[in-house]
Length: 274
Image (cartoon, rainbow, N blue to C red):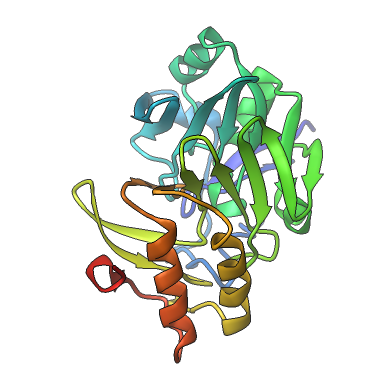
């Protein structure tokens, strides 16, 4: 029996299975909530009526998503580089119009993601566009059964000219951020969460588990702080939103505040972070 892709109706995680999967490994992890009424599964055929959406959020950076959203509602970022287009994180699903648009733009030279909550439908991009590089942090390979990793990464990896992956740890052991050195954007995955009012950033937080409100430990925060202080940026992108301004100075202030006492998972107003 051929393996088929199934998406968890609760969180959107994709896995390939012989028939309907017995459970979702992402939902059973402490970072996510279990479904209220048991497992339900979605196949690509169930998403035939979904609409592709994309928009430019910064020069050379586009976000792709699907409406109605799938699972947690992730955005897949596509970044222009001197070597071609790079995909980072994945939309929950890519309708034909999105795949056709990416083909029209020349396809992808590389694909990567911060951690499993941002994988979305990376399997579709690999199946349809065949990028030669699919890069994931080596400590997070256990979550990648829906697609094939061609380049497991360590602490630092240049994904394309001017785009550098750094292992941050914290939210997941292999959690990785992507630094766009030329544009001054840090694709932070779930190392950070940004609270927005409209398009305006108003709060910043970090967490081990957002739904369960479990904070990072002091050691994890110190590790992330040591990385962030070496990176210059004035905008951040999570798998869910693009936020500008969002600066190195503000993130450092958040980490310092967390290290000053008992850490929290909730947001700190940006007005208090300078």
